[in-house]
Image (cartoon, rainbow, N blue to C red; front, side, top):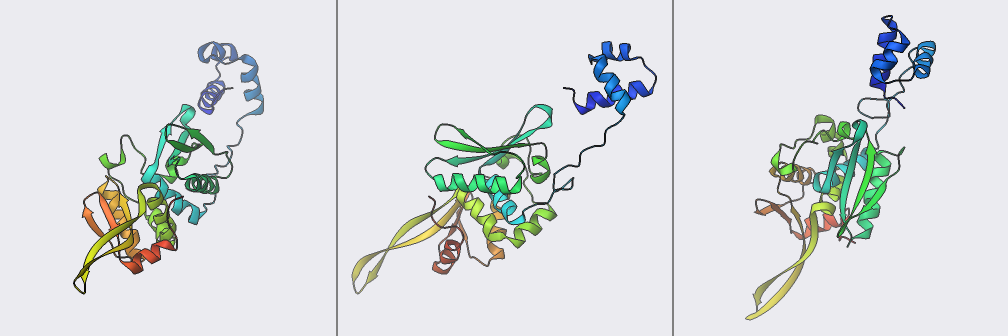
Length: 249
């Protein structure tokens, strides 16, 4: 099995008049394969299924969700023949989130299988494709918080269409819904009150700004108790987030 680059080099040599025997020795290709390529000529390139550089279509709602998961707990790694692995790390304590991650990866790239790779304390939901970098141009060497993370115009358009799904991905990866408490003096007595709030934590200031922007799209108030932590605590804001995020499970 020869890759397309070697095939192109061999066809160029044949077209230049080099003998099959010489090409076979120089490139390590069998003469039978060279004769077949010579006689059949250049085969038409198969259309790419990539929604960005080919003829594929993109499930925008699922992509918005997956983009949030990727910015939180996702990564791309390069393998042989320019194939990239998309991996979403999911805590084993939340099996529903693992199922959900697999569902959205499959919806964005339905033509290939999705794998679950067990690790210590978490499951990596993985999919292999040459075109994952087309869909996640934020990919680069090193941790995300050590490089610039910005959304392209087309990504911003999708998130603006489906901000709730994007936030679901972010909060399901690097966020949580917790119960807080406070005390107040009522009629001279100290009373304890409990209330829910959402927290999102991320070391990347760029990803934090993207999260803030998505919350602003839905007019959900937020505050920053720490530079790497965002809080949504107002009752009406928590109620809004409950409609499309909710507790992890």
